[in-house]
Image 1 (cartoon, rainbow, N blue to C red):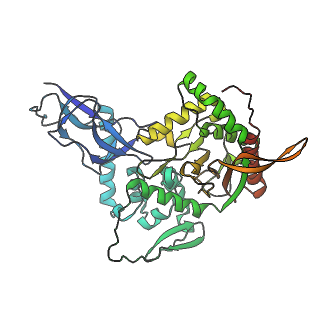
Image 2 (image 1 turned 90 degrees about the vertical axis):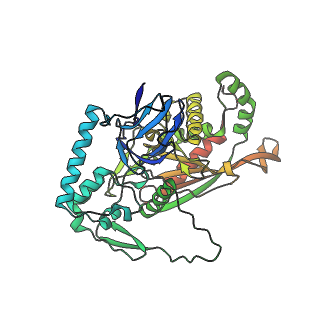
Image 3 (image 1 turned 180 degrees about the vertical axis):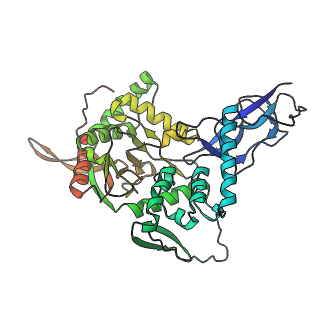
Length: 437
């Protein structure tokens, strides 16, 4: 009889724990290699955990909803269905076990010295570390919900709550009975949600975890940044003709499909080099600008569930067209398969959303915080247009598309935003039809 421990895998450099959201297999179920056993969620992405072993699930060591440290044993698998689990199963490696014991001891001490906070009453996700700090410092749930988070999807991080503590007495928060509290320095902002009636025949659908995160992130972004959107129309006929001419040979040679997305990303990277103040963030105080060294491009991707995720191509300015294409295709495929790692959807400095995929000609996207701008690219349409020639003006059929740039008016004025958008269009319009793919 062989018995194996299923370990909570490492999900990325920045992830130390994950929440079990669903057990796909129950105790006593047979399991094949690479068959999904459970689904987990970090504060960045949901993932499926496959079995590296074949056998029978004999013991689940955690329940749904439990937060588990990376490296901890979450289940035991036996090669024989009749195998029994020892009375004192090994639940963690020695190093991880030590960390877990310390965390549990700390929580127990906090519980005895401070009143319990019912975090289940909040729609937001807080890590165990943030919860412990809140309990130790007597931070109420109302205060915690009002802290502006700098983490993925606006999550409150350890740094956020520690930065909040010295100034908590200087801030004021107003909460409406049906609203959400927002705190901003000495200002008091109240947000009231409208009352919604439910009529006969209406269906009430509970948002899934990812949709709640997206909703929270979108509301936060509109609250933080004054959005302005500019538009340009670009004649991309040469780009379209070049791609049609080269895409088959490119795929045959490189084994990669050449979509429009890498071409758009290449133009955006060039434009960011020309206008580096687009590649910035505003710090949490709202008074300092962080100019990014790296150009990390996020590409918004729709999931089969209808939710949205934004994988990031890091250091895109150091990649050629083939490199960008490989990253785009790989990230898009793994996003659809729910195989992205948490580190792969964070650290973006600029985001592109291709609304043209849905037949839309333009859009007004919401900024992906803490970035300060986001580009929407519309569908490419044939149009009659005036063509200037040495012999005079002619009417011809050209390929046009709209580009929309939403930007944070705190730090990006119309001159910068409009010039940057125009530069992207220039790079697309002036595509070299003789370049090699």
